[in-house]
Length: 187
Image 1 (cartoon, rainbow, N blue to C red):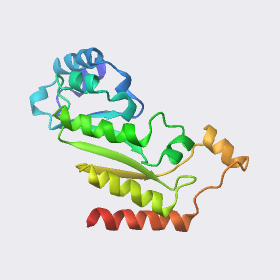
Image 2 (image 1 turned 120 degrees about the vertical axis):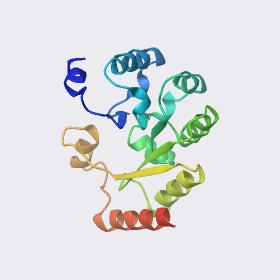
Image 3 (image 1 turned 90 degrees about the horizontal axis):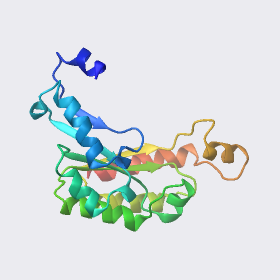
Image 4 (image 1 turned 135 degrees about the vertical axis):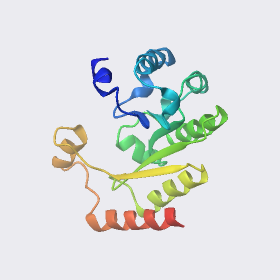
């Protein structure tokens, strides 16, 4: 609350709940957060309020509970529509769960959905990445973000790379993936 007091004179255009797993919070938790923010700001002037979510957290019931809150954008961390890639990067969801989450978000009334994808993943091929892009486009996401895999030194995936348990995507393939992504999204 003291941080909100310090920033109170400023107009806030966007609010973003992300960088972690905010979709683990209940609608009641979010309501308390919004009540606190509303004590300092006029939320009717906020243009975009985003919730970053994992696909497996987005049940139909949870999505319905979120609709009572001022969220107007969902950013869904799908990363890939390839089950082998998802398993390798230790995601809890599979491709079907990701597709269901986007469709159920639409059915719940969310009309501004962003899908996060990753490229340069171990085991990922140009063909599997192209399929993930095709699937994201087919789901009519309003926004697609794509990030190249980056590894912090202490994470298990980095340690297994160092131990030679898997091979990193080479720079040329990653550049080709980025080029393909740019071309497909521009088209």
